[in-house]
Amino acid sequence: MSAGRLRGPAGRRLIAAAGAGVTGLTAAGAARLAYSALIRRPPGGTRAWSRTNHRGESVTLLEGPAAAAGAIAGVLAWAGLQSVAGSADGPAGGRAAWRVAAAMTVAGAGAAGFGSYDDLAGSSDRRGFRGHLGALRNGEVTTGAVKLGGIGATGIASAALIGGNAADLVLNTGLVAGFANLLNLFDLRPGRAIKAAIASSALIAWPAGRRRAGATGPGGTSASALLPPLAAALALLPEDLGERAMLGDAGANALGAMLGAAASGLSRPARIALVAGIAGLTAASEKVSFTAVIERTPALRRLDMLGRRPVPPEPAVIIPVQRLADQDGEGRPDGGLRHRGQRQDTMGLAGHPPTGRPAEDTDIAPPRE
Image 1 (cartoon, helix red, strand yellow):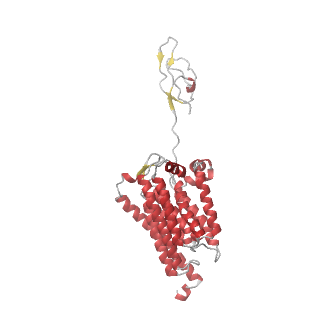
Image 2 (cartoon, helix red, strand yellow; image 1 turned 90 degrees about the horizontal axis):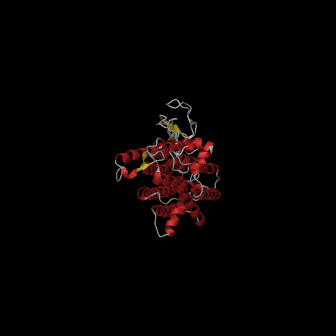
Image 3 (cartoon, rainbow, N blue to C red; image 1 turned 60 degrees about the horizontal axis):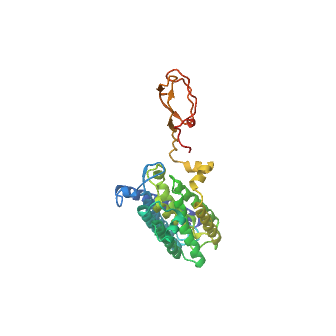
């Protein structure tokens, strides 16, 4: 194909498709390489990055730094390709792409750094904004509070790199910090945070694909900026769903922050709607358990379980049954244990009829749940 044809619409579409493929492969490959290297030689030792998941099994948090590294490598590759292609992928030129890439890199690296600090040094004594702010009022600076402040500062730096007026600075800071925190709220079950990242990307990409010239934000980039963090996360999704690893604060915060920075190219009304939605969900998380809502909603529960190991059935509750006494007063055991509430349907060992009483009627019944 000649150089002239490459500058036409068909050529630009071809360049965009090739660039998306290279970007995705770079991000995914870098994430897998980083994960393999970190697993072989974990900084600080394996134990520092090991946590117990909801099943009581040990998982590693090294998925998070690996996902952040892969996403950043993919963003840099994306910006380089955009620069070579000029404005082939939408109205953004090469310089705008590098500006957004710098903002996404700062957002991802800063969020991963502060998230790693909270992963390694934090505790679960304080949770959510209320817990950390309450600790601050009592003079206690928690690792979570340090992380929140650090990600807020990271959001400001990222928004400053994107540019725009004061309103844009506030909105883009809210997107970076808000998405970083929101995605972390979903990292409570295998694959859930990555699925939330996919849904968030679709939400961002829809108005980005429908925008008109002059209706973009200061970032001015296309939806292809979402590809690097998504590709990096999807490359590590098998580890997450297999319950061998989890994103942790480092990975969830980094991916969310980068998605927020990528959303800077949306129109101002779209960004206002996103920030409002993030604020509403974050406020709701202080009162409502997202896990409980998902479990009660069949469609959400099916999506949440997609690709995951099946949840084992709850074990039966076993309790001892009071010994039966025969007519002459000689106590004889009934020879076993009964489930809660199960009546004895067989004759006693001495041939006497059973009492037929449920376990709740005995003096050794378990306490009510």
